[in-house]
Image 1 (tube, one colour):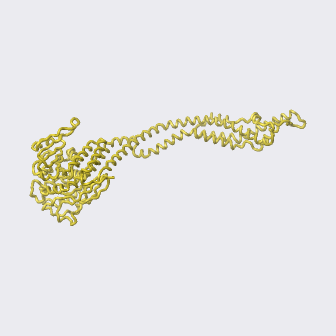
Image 2 (image 1 turned 60 degrees about the horizontal axis):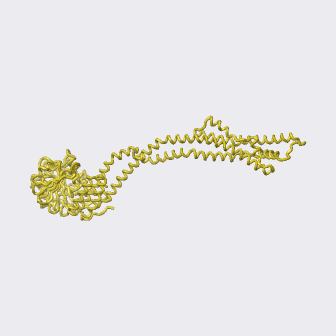
Image 3 (image 1 turned 90 degrees about the horizontal axis):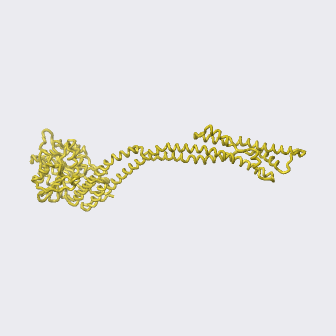
Length: 603
């Protein structure tokens, strides 16, 4: 759960330190350094007003004007190529050289303001400059921050400005009158607005305005419409000139009062600013981590076959696993099934019908002691009768086996072998070998009782049937084992054929697993960081500069930007209206036209 910020920024320095350590552990030294700056800022209890703008906008001259003396060098060339902070105190300047791998902790240089201009000309060698001077306006804990001038030809300066904005609590964006609506200018203003810090737009060099060419009301309307189209959220628009101090549209004299009013709300604005910086820096870190991971994730995603392939991966692995398992288990399953089928056929084969039982009874009767055949008890006739009865029973048994048993068993084995492509001419020849023995020896050997009785005939037929089916079963299963051996070989070949696909899926699954792990880790890291972010109430309506005497036109309704919800990294925050600069007469009685607070990207 997000914690709620108190007015005392120092109380949540622990949160800043915790996030800094998390960023450092993640290898983001630049982000960790920015949070170390925030920790220093929270403990310093200073309200920093950052001035941003293009080289030709007169930013440095405006800062000097507010200071009442020349603190920053100004001129037609970009002299402030680094960040300069100005505080109240005894006159001095500290210059911080750029850190390098050879010199990670360079010695801070102390110099006078008179020598500062020479150092600033070689701004690329220095990371930042700290200036103290007797500026009463800043005695209440205020800091003016001069950021590098930016234009479309030097993206490094724009990056340097953005990297310094975590120090800022209020942003004054200074623009040249003639370049306000340029795409480069509007784009940069939008990037400043996205930080969520209170933003004041200062249109400098208003002395360039020519009323006869374009009315000021129309110019202002066009300017505000342009910023609205770019969704730039701002607290006020001011029009200034240093060249003509008495210009009727000049609001430069109101700037010290505006700064004083902001400093009076230092605690509130500092708390909100620190939260905004924390949120923005965390989102920057998350974005940079995602960018750093993009190539590796793209490679892993390609190895995994793409997002759609990953979604099908589990199903394909399951299908391949089932196919492999099918071939692995098939020989054993078929062996068990066919044994059961053979046993079923043998069990239901009708081998001892009534005629055969009758013949068996007659044969058994001929085995009784004292059996005689013929009227005169001729020994020859008796032996011939015994032989006849034996051969008749053997033939009947053979006929039953050939008609009721063998066709079914043979068809079972043949159709099964053909279904797996195992049947051959040799198998057909071997099929003839499953015929059980049904000769006279079997008939004689099956007799177990000497004292024969009519009841024994049924038992004898059962024994005879059991001997025949057992012999047939043994021979059929022997052929089956030979066929199953071929099936086992065939199954092994099928499983071997699956190996490349199985290996490919394993490689794909490994890549998909590493991809998912990294995505989840990045998401968890981002969620953990965002959960640490505190909340802060949006400041009430910020002070605005009093309108210049000539600015007496009401703002056209068509140019008024709609209110925008200020979204924090952890969720929606309530929007608070900020009044625009303009005449008091133009403002409704309720306190002025509402302007939506700064938008921030959804976390």
